[in-house]
Length: 444
View 1 (tube, rainbow, N blue to C red):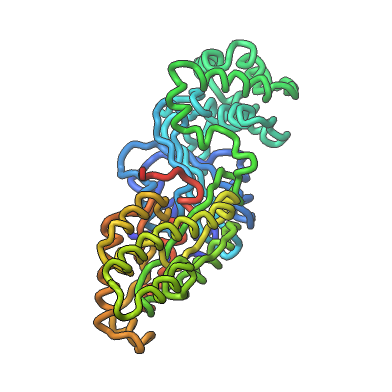
View 2: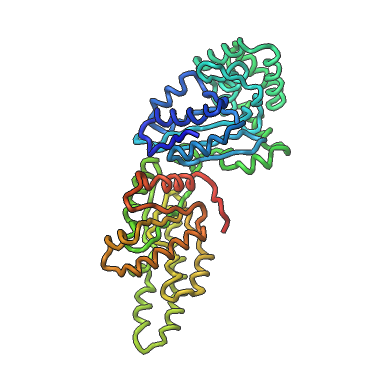
């Protein structure tokens, strides 16, 4: 298969070229959605305006995976329940902000309302446009069910598509609309397609029927499973218009691994997405925990060192809880908190293997994204030559084993800080944006 990989593309034209090339691979059917100028308007946009495309999910391989391999993108949403609209939303970084591509696969639906099954969708050979009944459903029914009436230009395209639709296809569309939305709403939609003036109250009536259909016994479970995207985002909406939540990104690694550089780069890139960030130090070395001074005073020569260190580990565990409580306000404000180190330091100090470390890890939520900046140990040592090389190597190996445990709630990411990777932060940025928009995928 052709290699479409792109390194942090700077232009929407490049993104579009990659996406359409992958969709076209193997002769797959695909089409633009929306009005005829949708792609041009998206190319000219600078904000998170999304570009809608439809594709047939048949062979060859799933294009979503190919697009994610080719472009440094974040998967914002992924819905694959056949009882509802099946789609994926991808966000790709550009210097002008994130570019969003929304891909619908299979049957044309809005929520559980079936508009046109995939086998009946017609794609015009010129321009990859949905044609006839599919175009009517896309240009008229879809926006109405999303709460708005199409503008004059879009209505004109709808009526041209209706005129080109054969009587049998018209009847099938009318029947599906009636089954999903009721006879009255279906009749009004067909009348608008045929040239009638739209009733301003039609979107509200159509959405009420759609809500009733979504909560029907046959659809309730699927609706609940997709509740994050079904329910309006409201105050939780982020810069891309989707529901967001607070995220903890914890960086671990020995001194010289590149934690500060990675943290600063991540902060800048997330600001390009419009996401707000906060930073915090979550280690022991700087004496930020009050028990550090207490432990140092208590561990004077002549005292029972083992007992004191065991006790200090439990004090640290309690103080890590206190530290985490200070993160609650920024997380409640849906910020990305970038933490230098995490409570995993307690595994090694002040008492290696202490039960206090296991207790703290069970009590406190794990970070959403756990990050290890990494490079050849000689390069790490060159940055911090005051630390013994053997110590740095042993610590870095322990952190590699930590990531292999997969303790994070969303993802573990290794960032190459050697300078040999063109865009070492791409995977980390994508994982963080995904964590902010999606549900936590691992239980604790």
